[in-house]
Length: 346
Image (cartoon, rainbow, N blue to C red; front, side):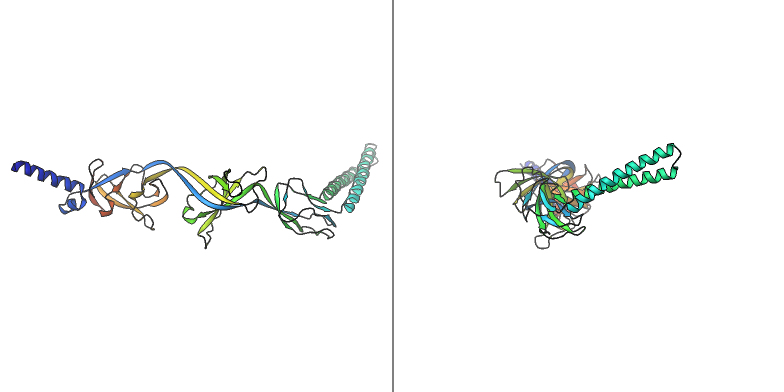
């Protein structure tokens, strides 16, 4: 009977010192811990953000000719299609210039032909032929310029867009390089999603996104992150992620509000989030068990946390054993007993 009691007592002491850290420390034994190797795995994260639809590209239509404004058939906020008339200028001067340029080219072409014929009869020099050829080339350039000037008396929309500003009215005269109409392209459009600043490192260009809007409940628009604003809004502590969306039927208008889900999928070295010491501070760390069977405190740089796992950007290498249970009572360089499968009583 006494032997049985002694065996039970020894077993109890062994169990406690191998599964309870405070008891193991009292008798100078390695402290029991549980570890998991740092592993590269697929990490998928969904980031939510509210946002507003905005034009994707700003376009400013400027005057390239001086003329009287005859017609401006569009107004602020109006949606225009490709080729739709924006501004019509008085073409009379440029029509006359085109007629004159055609006549000048015809004369220069004939003059070149006559000079070349005279050269063959040795009545004209090479220099005279070159001068006639140069005059013909200049007349051809002048004709092209006249054609372009006449075409520029009509200003049309180059893309599906919304009119943002209108700077001219009928009866006014334009100046060279004067702004006439400002447009915002709406196919594609951008949703400017306001993402919380703590997700700045998780959002990247090319990231897939799904957008829902208040205007079209139940309808999802697929897009990708086209650019990221690195500036943080001081009031909302958020930054803008610009999601490009196809809008062929022009359903999505400037100012429409909605909600975006940004989908991130990547391969990353990760450990259980419970292994991270001081995870919300600026000195995150883990205990790594080396071949010397001691726990070494390592500062780490962390990335995203998803599904109980945290991405490790630096500080730990793949395959290293990271303490996941028992780390909060450890000291740097403590001897440890890695107990993957035994009971744990803290």
